Amino acid sequence: MSEDQPPSTQSFLAKLSKQFFHTPLKSNYELLQSLKEAEENHVIGSHTRSIIEGTMQLENMEVRDVMVPKSKMVTIEHNASTKALLDIMIKSAHSRFPIVNSEHHKIQGIVLAKDLLSYLAGDKRSEFNYKEYLRSAILVPESKTLGSLLRDFQQKKSHMAIVMDEYGEIAGLVTLEDVLEQIVGEIEDEHDLEEDNIIDFGDGRYLLKANTPIEEFEEFFSVKLTVDKVDTVAGLVISGFTRLPDQMDEITLQGFNFKILKTDSRRIHLLEVSRQAQPKEM
Image (cartoon, helix red, strand yellow):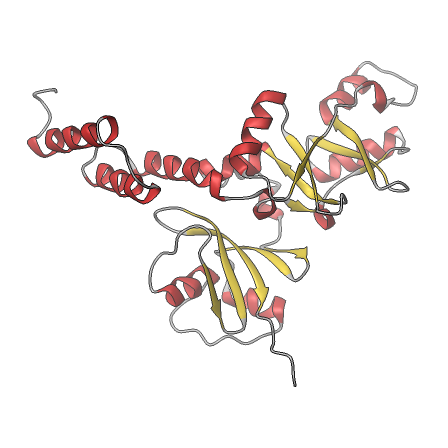
């Protein structure tokens, strides 16, 4: 132990070392408490703690919690022309595109924007034959954990997977970025800033950015909420819990069910929202 460290830090490091290497932790809660104490004693920073907590949460989250729903997917028809391909790629600003055969409701594979751009840079005059560049698509169930999906991405050297529902139909897609954001927080670019705060998942479920203003929420759902000194949906949810909720916690407030999809030690990031089921009249 370095003599330059203050006694409080030395004693904490000794305790932490003993806890990790001599006394097995009995639960994730104990580990989280140890991380909190490590941050308070300035052994690790808040960002480091957030990353560790995010990594731990991967095994508790499923693909359905972070996927892009089918209604929001940007796909390309298998018989699209080179011009149509280029137009879609430019408009969406994505880098990977599922090629679909709508007639048979099948995903044929994934095409990368860089392959088309490389082809066009060669001054080719014939139509772009996507089949020569087609990459196989990973198919995963909605219930797959993000931890398992991350391992699949690493092993198969892929950045995108197609999500299938229990009937074998396309439910959506999920990317490596979607998984990494659960660890390091939101990875925003110019395109992300244009996305809606509320996304319809279908089946009465909505994906909601926690910092969505109350007024926008009310306008979207055509409701009037009773709020006191809060400006965002995150504030409303926290006031209902009277604490910062944990990931996957749920609460029902003013006719809506809120499920915490992404949070860290400081704030809520992402919510799943659905209307509270109304009791059937007898």
